[in-house]
Image 1 (cartoon, rainbow, N blue to C red):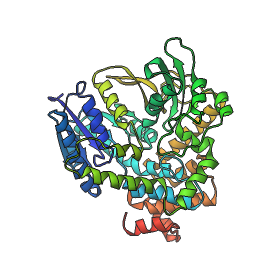
Image 2 (cartoon, one colour):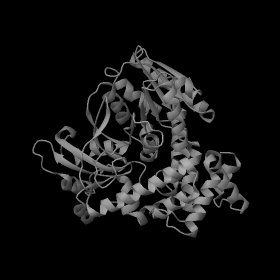
Image 3 (tube, rainbow, N blue to C red):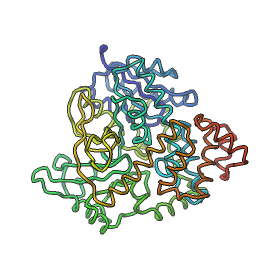
Image 4 (cartoon, rainbow, N blue to C red):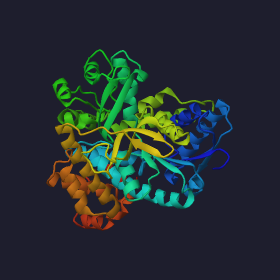
Length: 467
């Protein structure tokens, strides 16, 4: 290892980067960082320059001798890195707008990591992450890959399954958000409770126990969540609809916020369609784009040297805490409890050992060691197996460009009712994203020859602009 750590962040021009810097600064006593390389693509050059300058100001204000490097050369950034973090979005926010608006235009859920939108984010992302892994094998073979790029579970599983790179963990801010919020619901602190998570990314459940007595307090927290006078911690990017108390009591576990898209499917679809049809709001991606524009206006201020409060409205709160704490745990061999995506290895007996699952783990120098959760109750087991198999098909399609595998995934996905309408959604998404889906070039050419066109005006305009 060189004199001090080298961190490489791919997608360094992201509006999240100041939060990541904040996390590293808070943990500098455990992470002797010497240099941070922020890398992005040509389309992200301006944002990289803006956020990179803010990142350097943050380090200078903290008083630490850390140099922030900015580059569009990924190989330069990866060379001899100790840790590689990934937070990139292939196609930028315009791609997310397409992912949301095309399904909504046919009356289906449009969402970043669920339904057709989540599937297509994976199709665009997995080939890129596998390219990064091949470069890491050459340029930084001892580095750890800490993935925060969504859909995190599928991306992480592809790294391990297809990239054959085991020095990797996948992260999400949702579990840590629950752990920080839920103790308040029962007048406890985090250190007074023990959390146990099991599932896959954005589709996990958890149980909670009193650390002193071992008594389970899951039902008490459910009661707190459903108290209208309390904040149940629903992530900022998810419409708040309360779960059914009787269902959660029977389940005996607390679902994550994203389970609303499955347990409360019609309610969430109704809300999403209302925003889609309201020109003053638009889909979540369009709303996020407005917040991001405001953030970069703040980031341009040469006097700003800290993370602005507005960043909390962007979604992804506590990202820096879980990402930087994981890196610190690996570097210091801390064997710390962190919820992450890693190989199952029996933690959830309802899934194969080589499945990548999101579970409570002890993270140290050898990576994540998952904690056994045991069999899931009937409904959760059935849903989890369905979703994991659907994701495996998406990963296969992302790697091979097999249109049949994609249609099989569509048939399994609860958010894409199979049939002619679902096929129209998939075909339009293929054409809308053709710039980023070279593995589907033959299929896309056939669809265009058949006269398949894009229905939504906003998406059609983005495509005509080359975005």
